[in-house]
Length: 391
Ligand code: NDP
Ligand code: MG
Image (cartoon, rainbow, N blue to C red):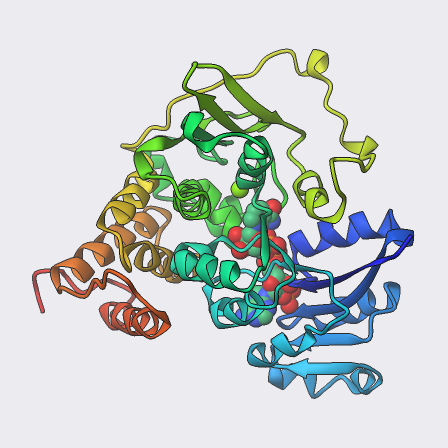
C-alpha cells in the first residue's frame, strides 16, 4: 500500500497529538513529512524523532537559537516561512494552529490543491468566504475537523442540501452550566481551562466555558456550509455524544453519535469510508442509558446572540467578535479581566466598531488587519474598553 504523506501544522497541540496518535497506531499507512510548533521545541523534537520527520516549522525565533540539535533538520523559522513545508509529496495537510494569527499562512496553504483538514475555527470565522473561494479555485479539498462540523459534513455526504431544513450542533454546556451569573464573576483561569468532556488547548477551553466556542462554531458552520444563521442552532447536551443533527423537510432527523474524542473526527480525513477500527472509542448506549438536552440560557451566556448578531451585520463583524474574544481570553488568562468581562467587553467592542462606521461588507485581508488595529486602539492600558459614546 502506498503511504500517505501528512504535514501537521500545530503538531504539538491537543489536535496535533490526536492526529499523531492515529498515525502511531497505523504507521504502515502514513509518513509524517512536516511538523510545526510555536515554542514547544522539546516536544517538536520528540515528535520528529519518533516519526522520523526531517522538516520542521518553529515560530519562536528567539528560542530556536538555543537548540543546537535543530541543525540536523530542515527548519523553517517564523510563521511566514511555514508554507515552505508544502511540496509535491504532501498528500494531506492538518491545520491545527490555534488562533487567527495563522490567517496569512492558511491563505497560502489553501491554494495548495491538497486535502486540508481544518481544526482552526478562528481563521474560518475571520475570512472564511475568501478562504473557501480560494480553495475552490485551486481544487483544494477542505475537511472540517471541528467535531460538530465534521459530524454535519459526514451527515450531509450524498444528501440533497435542498431537503435539509435545520442544522443543530450540540454544546456540552462547559464547566459552569449550573452557575448563577453572580457566581460566574469569580471564576478563575484554572477553573475555566479544565473542561468536563473534552481535553483541549487553553483558549478553546475558556471559549467552551463562556459558550463563545459554540458562538464561533455557529459562524463557522454558516460559512463552511453556506447556510443562513436562522437555519442553525446550538443546544446543550451534557453527555456530548450527539455532535450534530440535520433535520429534513419530512421532519426526520439524522444525528451523528460518537464518544467525545477528536480522533474520530480526524480519522475521517486520514482513512476513507469510516474503515479504520477505532476500538478504544466504542460507544455503549446501554451503559450510557440516557441523553439530556437543554435550551441555552441566553441571559447567562450571550455568546450565541453575539455570534448571530455578527452574522446578521455581516462583513467584518464575525472577525471583530473573534479578534476581540481572542484578546479578552488572553487578558482573562493573564488575570487582567474577570470571567464575565470576556463577553461584556466583546459586546462593547462590537457595538463601538459599528457605531464608528468601521464595518466593511466584502472585506479582504487588508480590511481585516485595519479592523484589528482599530480594536487594539479601543483597549485602554488598564484593560478597560473605551466607552462607545465617549471618543
Ligand atoms: P493547543 O493550544 O493545544 O495547540 C495549538 C498548536 O498551535 C500548538 O502546536 C502550538 O504550538 C501552535 N501554535 C499556537 N500559536 C502559534 C503561533 N502563533 N504560531 C505557530 N504555532 C502556534 O490548541 P488545540 O489543539 O486545542 O486547538 C487548535 C485549533 O483547533 C484551535 O483553533 C481550536 O479552536 C481548534 N479545535 C480544537 C479542538 C480540540 O479538541 N482541541 C476541537 C475543535 C477545534 P506550541 O505547542 O509550541 O504552543
Ligand atoms: Mg467543536
